[in-house]
Length: 322
Image 1 (cartoon, rainbow, N blue to C red):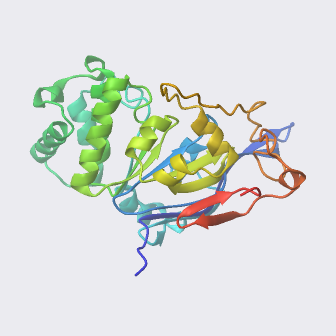
Image 2 (image 1 turned 120 degrees about the horizontal axis):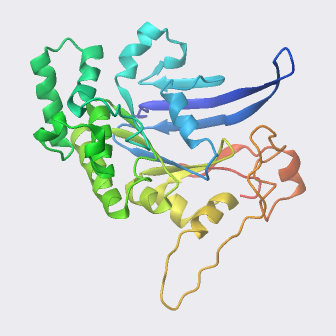
Image 3 (image 1 turned 30 degrees about the horizontal axis):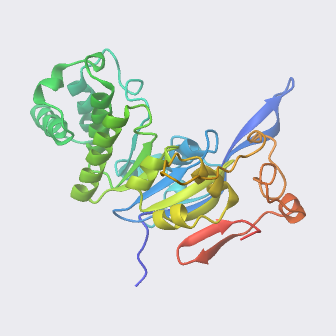
């Protein structure tokens, strides 16, 4: 029996128009997300990796409706949520939440933490004031904070504690899918480990699915079930964590993995250096988007876009050379 994914994205595009002239006519587009396909199953963690500017965060924000998609389909629990009205979409939005990169910027500095967390229940539930406060205290305890933190302001917390508050806010309505947008990148390494442990505990307890966006491959290897590699808004490789880290197929994936420091006594590790800068998403290269920096590029790579295909069970690559 085929298991239906919790989230399914088909040929998703998010373009931003570039306008110029007196009449502000659209001259071209920034292709932030360009024909991305992915699936997230119940209880799993799919990580999205790539260089800064590759479209990772835009992908997550588009899935949640924080950015408008240009084309493609987003299915959540079998429903095409991209075609729903704002009223019908509201029930799905409660089931899809986000943890932001900067927990301080996502909190109102003048508002006490307890009241900030209660806002979720004011908007989405009919709870009384006492019920809301009781639920917020439960959330604080669940993410490793204390009841006395209810009456404190954001500046009175450390970075790790603020991110725990962000996690509590995301967990408030018992979602099925949580998008973690660089959720640990702004934290110290020791605090990162604590937050990752908390995320895994909450996932096991509530059967959560994570779309984990990160540039830290060490963290990704530890937390992920599957990994999607993006380059210039396009998906170039997708597979299980073992497939991506032990048997990468795309030249870009190999270059990313070669940048991970792995000191092994007596062994030298060759690093793949990419020449040139990341091309502009407003001036998209023809053919394979990676051909301008790929050391193995052929004439076919320059003129023909590679097909997204399965090279082994669950392992997909978009490359002419594989």
